[in-house]
Image 1 (cartoon, rainbow, N blue to C red):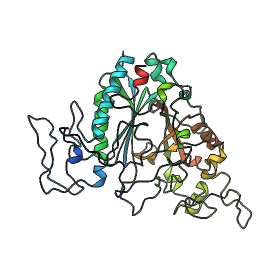
Image 2: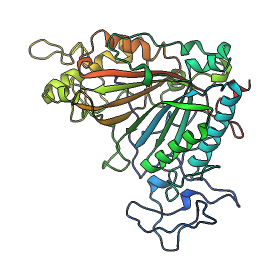
Image 3: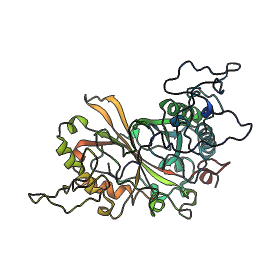
Image 4: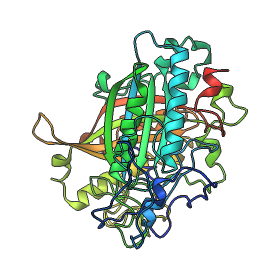
Length: 428
């Protein structure tokens, strides 16, 4: 669970993506439907039994900034990578159905892209919309689509499979469930509203039809926008500030580390990225038996504010050589924050954008909870792999986590207006 973690949580005062003006005559969108957390009894129009999308009655309370926030679909890099953390997420992998190949996959990606564009704009899906989110705004909804290693064999596109998509090596700390790992296709859905996210999940599942069937699904969450008095780095389920050293889009080498260049190989991956997905269970009962000081020594940072144990504030540079009164390193040699630093791993860096999860009590009688780890990089062999190998050799956090599922997916660049995601691969 490398330390280079999550972007800052957004607050309502600065929503992601400003509302976009709509052309005259365009279908009225959910963004203009009105509803707040306390609104009840909202009446929606319906005709002939169809789901109705209509403007709210006069005097109704307008959408909050959370519901009104919109992310664009037609962008250089797919949505859901550089956006701030979202409050709700669904990760779902599909395998192509019996007899489905390249033609069926292309039609599916076309349907998915159209659905994503519509729902991200606050509009209903084109066919069989469930109406689950008809009284909500887009709520920063994003869709992200990727291809697994097995997809290329199923579609006869082996020559287009990137070298960077070679299977991840085995790690000694892995306890992987193959049924919940990998897959032909991967979809990441994120939103700041749980019903909007669920509505999107049902839409992609329905769009799949007979072309693809769900292989696995995982559901996650983060802190809701506005839940803190000021923007801050998120906390994970261990209570630790998690994400201080995450690369930032303002960094001069951000694109180089995170995205495949426009002239990169293969050509269809231009402006894309590679997502490593790991379901990391946190052994919370064991972790919570440690004192706060012991937990801080495992991580190498203060639990209260995320500052390094060597002193300063959260963003202060960690002094790896500083010793205490007894001559011991202030930041232990096996502390998680020390081991995962890019300067301790040949400059390896990745953009982490995870969700927490809680799936009740496991068969072992302890919480089945932890982190849906998602990291983005231009090349996982230079990003995720070297860091995880080093963690495997002696991270103080290892006894308190268990890697239970894994996947690696090639995520192409964003779709241009009038195109669908993956079109350069499937029609190239």
